[in-house]
Image (cartoon, rainbow, N blue to C red; front, side, top):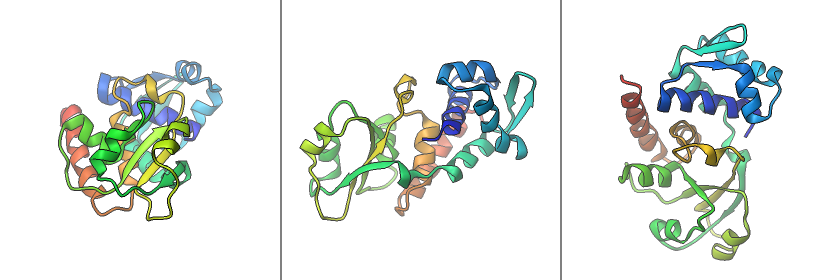
Length: 197
């Protein structure tokens, strides 16, 4: 994930979960080990579309939806895939066999978090840093891939909800499956409730 996306995820997650809308560029830079110029650069497009208002060392999130949709359209999910394979097992069995070090996203994350599925799904997406145990359980196969492993970042596990809802949303946005839209819309409704709309 690009450095600017780390900032966008943090801002969106803090706004959604903690109702925080004002941020310090210096504090964000320190938290993620980035330069303040990188944080400033991450605000360029959001500022141009009116999603944030920058003033001095602080900035304010003015439009949650605009920043979320900007991230969703800028995200390059296929580039994040570090392993994919095929399994003939049912989806829930695949999910149950995943090693504990992985982090679910997309359909699996939605089902785990909310205890429901918006539609049947045939593919699973997980974040992982280590592929050794994954490849032992799910070796390479020539069939149509239904297991996708995305490269994680070192900050993903620091969130109370892992992954945070904005991350799940932008991942769903970037999936081509017909049922991705149903999950994306269902998650958006849940996020609107959290935002008090």
